[in-house]
Amino acid sequence: MSDALPESLPTHLIAGIHPDRLEKLRTREAKRFAQGRPKAREALAQAADIFLDGVPLHWMKDWPMPHLPLITKAKGARITDIDGYEIDDFCLGDTGSMFGHSPEPVAKAIRQQAGRGLTYMLPSQDALAAGQLLSERFGDFRWQIATTATDANRFAIRVARAITQRPKILVFNGCYHGTVDDVMVELHNGTTQNREGLMGQVADLTLGAVACEFNDLASVEAALAKGDIAAILTEPVMTNSCMVLPAAGFHDGLRTLSRRYGALLIIDETHTISSGLGGYTGVHSLSPDIFVVGKCVAGGMPTAVWGLTPETAARYDAANAARPAGHSGMGTTLSANPMQFACLKATLSEVMTAKNYAHMEALAARLSHGLAKVVDRHRAPWHVVRVGARVEFICAPGPLQNGTEAGLAHQPAVESALHVALLNRGCLIAPFHNMMLISPKTKKRQADRLIHAFDEILSELFA
Image (tube, rainbow, N blue to C red):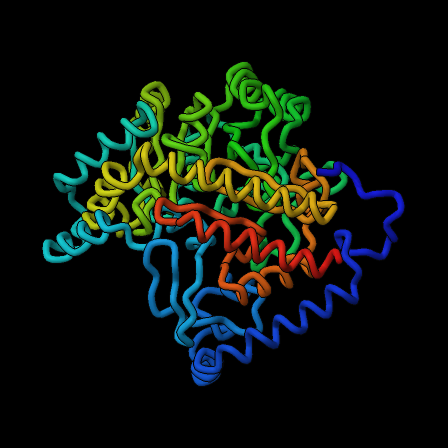
């Protein structure tokens, strides 16, 4: 794959594509989608005034289709919509269903637990079993259960500040850790500022956070040297803005620097759990002080976990014992409910297995290789990245080094047209970026269909 745009390409091209050709594809595919889904269009129109902006979650507005499909069923790695289309699902709930829709052990656990109660703010035997399985899968941590990874990261940040008595969290420009207010900062001309576009945010978030570029250990050390950083919060791989892989030695450097300057290291594995058994931390032997993972950890049941190493837990216990009486500000009523534990136990013991990861890894490698061959064959100035079961094509040369480069690599016009064109050919990828996931239930023929559809579209765009 080329590392740069050929000098002979006209500057008006969009990711190497002539704008007229891209617009022709976009218009045709949008029309094809809308004409093929009249039931969904009519139903959505009738319910347009029910939800704010017409959708129950505003993220659903980020899908680039002319209107949303209405899903009637999801099983394994396929979804069916109200207009009768069966679709190969490579989005998988943006990782929430990475192990497939309704894994049978999880569905069975839900059925059994439903008759025993949904929530009672007391532990169950499944809770004890799930806690043991968490340690077996991810390492020796002292665990807490949350409902979303956003909550888990929020609580981890609070713990880090309580332990260190420092105010700031170091995050990386372009990172994603859910919708935690504390990390909604970005770099602008080298200076940390509130992210542009935040709604209703009146606080100066730079009082509690500093942003550095991923893979830039010098900037990390300069920030830590000021002595006010409680923790580094990082994904092992930047995953939410065109994937950025860590440079050799980057994670070892983070661990060394955090210890040198007295900051904790928080690893958020919510997306990189795709890396393999134990997540990126397990596969690459990272050693965080606090470990966070969510989304698919309970097979699709809203669940996240955060854990402290024994040493960090002891420091937390000391800080907790010394605080004044009152509310700690951490926890939510429906977290750690018995349904979560039933699903955690089933997922960790029967779904999140070495055998399933081996299938996911092999098929993701096939998909990644196939997409890369298509990119090369059409001489597109693009590249393909894979992290375990997670694959992404990026409409720019690579590899990318940091969040700034990742942000500039986005090509919304190209990506949205490609997305709809792939869906019209029976393949659904993630709406926020060009991410694809392989589940244990994904078949080789599904990956091959996606490669073929990708090739067909690029044949037109780069003819």
